[in-house]
Every structure is written in C-alpha cells, then in structure tokens.
Image (cartoon, rainbow, N blue to C red; front, side, top):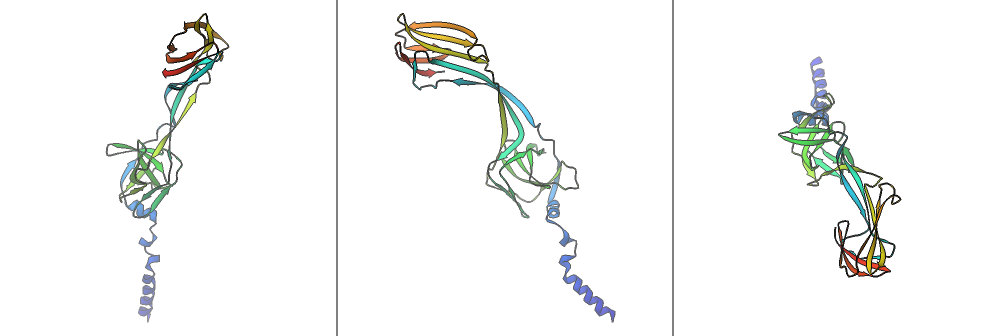
Length: 260
C-alpha cells in the first residue's frame, strides 16, 4: 500500500525539480563566477592627486595680425605672466553611456566621473580598473579606451582579487573612452608685469613710456623708462614682440602685431 504512495510523492517532487535542485538555486552572479577562469590581484590605484608640472600663462592686450589703434596715453603693450601649476587625478570621466555585453547580462555604465579602483597587469600590459557595482568591474587601457574585458569580484575573496569573465565581451559604442581628470592652480601674483604706453610725437619722434612693475603692485612700484624712435620707423620690436607701424601722429598710433 505504501509503494504507490511513495511513488506518487516522488513523482510530485521531481515534477517540481526546478524549484528544489542545486542548479535551480544558482544565481546569475554564481554563473558569472563559474565563467571566470583567470584570477588576478589588482595593484593599488595611482595617488589621488599628482603634480605634473608648471607653465607660464600670459595675459596680453594684442593678437598676432590684428590691427591696433592706440591713442595717446593708452597701452601699446600690456603683459602679465602668471605661473600655472598642473595636477592629474586618479579619476576619469565617461561622456556617454557605455554598454558592455556578455552572454549572461548587459551592463549599462552611466556617463559620469569614475575613480580608478585599481591597476590590472595582464599579459605584459597595464590597465585601469573601474567599479560597475559590488561585484563587477570594467577596464580601460592607460589612454582611457574601454577594453572588451569584464572582471568579477567574489564577495568571499579579498577586496583586490578579481576573475576575468571568459565569455566574449562587446563594447558599445565601439572605441568608447574615458578622459583623465586634470586641474590647475594659478598664482594670483604675476611673475612678470610690464606696460608700454604711447606718448605721441615728441621732437619729431615716436615716444613710448616703459613701466616695469614690481610683481603684485599692479604698476604701483617699479622702474620707468622713455624710448624714442624715428617718425619714419616701419617696424618696432617691443619686448620681443614685432609690430608693423601703419600710421603714427601725436593723437594715436596704428600698429599690426606680426610676430611674438
């Protein structure tokens, strides 16, 4: 009497096997983990901020090949030079939505800034690694070009350990890339500050007044000189800038900057 009942119970249980077997209880994360064949330990990310050098930035009152009309008492040449200090950060920006497609799942990555999570050294190449979510990572080369690589991090593994998903990965759009975040700091006090003022025609000569300001005084302190040039002068070289003289009288001078 019990055998048929037992058979019926067994039939009932096996008919619902999709709810009870180990295979049915595997999550998508476990499937991805099973496809992760090669394991790597990530290296730490670059320093958060790195100084990459300084440069001099000039503020000028002229542009090459743009005609200037300077009235008596106005600046022929006004130049300030500031020191600018440049920095690079351990962040990169994605400008448009990125989709990484695997056989199991598509991963949509939003356009925004992403901190560099770690560095992957693989097959003699170096890559930047970024976080998609708690378990998934995406990869770029050092130029920021997105690679067809997905990394899986098991929550049971050390934080820096990842596995490469062995399935082929497609990148959309092709050639997608991230841009490294940079910043700068500019000195408020100029390192160079000078002005050359037109003073008209004196004693039949073009007269210019030179002011060399002490940095930070905005012309309040410094040295001063007066220079004169023949009225028929066709070219003026002022502090390394070459001007063509188009016309000059006591009221104004017309110049064309031709060379820095």
